[in-house]
Amino acid sequence: MPISWNGSLIVLSVLIAMFGSFTALSHAERMRESTGYQAKAWMVAGGVTLGMAIWSMHFVGMLAFHLPVPIAYDSFLTFISVLPAIAAAVLGFYLLRNPKLQLKKIVIGGFFMGLGITAMHYTGMAALKMQPAISYDPPIFALSIVIAITAATGALLIVYIGEKTGLHPLIQHLLGAVIMGFAIAGMHYTAMVGAIFAPGSICLVGGLQIEPHLLALIVTCGCFLLFSGGGFANSLDRHRALDNVRLAHTQLEAQQKELRIAASAFEVQEGVMVTDANNVILRVNKSFTKLTGYSGKETLGKTTEMLISERHDKEFYPDILRALQQKKSWAGEVWSERKDGVINPYRLTITAVTNLAGKITNFVAAISDIREFKEAQERILLLAFNDPLTQLPNRRLLQDRLQQAIASSVRNQHYGAVIFIDLDHFKTLNDTLGHNFGDMLLVEVAHRLQECVREGDTVTRLGGDEFVVMLEGLNKDAKQAAIEAKTVGKKIGTVINQPYFLQDQEYHISSSIGISLFCNKVVSVDDLLKQADMAMYKAKNSGRNTLRFFSSAMKKIGH
Image (cartoon, rainbow, N blue to C red; front, side, top):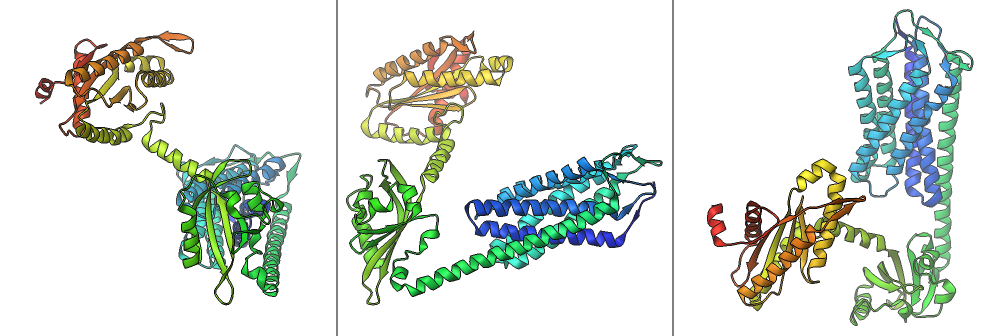
């Protein structure tokens, strides 16, 4: 079916996309400059604005496209088609909320924004309800999706690159608007090139429908009102914020004493405490109360000793005072006692305020809660040095502990042992019953192994169905140490042989165990593990469900 285009409307659709993108990016800047509910409001406003820009561009662009048959749009599909675009835009702006943008999140956000733009376009196309249905050229269809994703990612990257290079926000917005406008239009018209209207196609829209020219008028007027109103609100809010800053600055200049003690800096989210030169608390802000539990009335007139915990040594606080006397500032981590008695970690920054003669008159302390950061660090360490399934130490942590155990053994002349455990026929059980059952069994084996050893010994999962137990502080006599290690090895074998009840079903499994002793002679960690592994394979070759010690003969056979 022949198709024609209206060049003026094409230009108008691109301008609408650019105008909307510029307004949306301006909202994003206000979002990043604001906090709390105001930041969320600007995030939603930016998402809705960009979504409406995509939606408006689509339907104005559709008016630039003419078929030799009358067409109209299904009202329901027309209006719900805006939802994917808004949702995708809100997601993109949500990623921009973090003051420290991450390239990975930008790429992910761009991907989903592109999918949202694509979903909006093809939902809008479905609103035509053509018979026969519109078909699409597969390569061009795929190209339109790639363009949408690339466009969204590119717009977010403009903000990212602008921050890294110090580009002026207005230039960021203009570049982003131009790129997003051309890219959204490029996706739309690329997709339209790939649309195939069969000869004799008719539009089936009836009942509630929208006449194309009426839709054009509604869309064009609505989007310009929305974008202009958004820009005006953005500008008004920005000027109001600047007026508030100027007013605060004027008040600070009129009150020199208040300026010295920085009492006006309470709009920050950090907890702020102001003391005199003798550490008597003069003022705290609401964030301080939220972080510590102490209200202004409870702290006023008291010294900072009420916040001191016993987590630090005696020299910690005197060192801080010396730093303040010499450098007039100090920053670091501190453990402080909250009102509820909990010892909590904080990031503490203290600044000394001096008079014109250079004498310290006050201290201004700012604190922020870093408990979540500390817990995140602990989780990272757990992931780095522990097996995620069983929570046992992993190979990396085993190697570190084994290295220390070898060095200790050389010093104190006590034997140690490495017990290598491999579950017999575990692969068969795993393949037959499924990985979920296999994982449950491994977790249960880990629990049983921990019950077999002393508190100072180490139980490790190397991976798969292989475990290693490291024993320290065995007897100085080699034979006696071997007996002690064998006793533990047999105990392990017996415990593993006990039935397992997994989801009300009983299962049995055995193990092959290899043991290698170490003492006196310095041996590498890898060699020691290889020796225990060779002994374990000797146990397997001896019929499984048994235990073998490493001997030099095994090494010769291995070679």
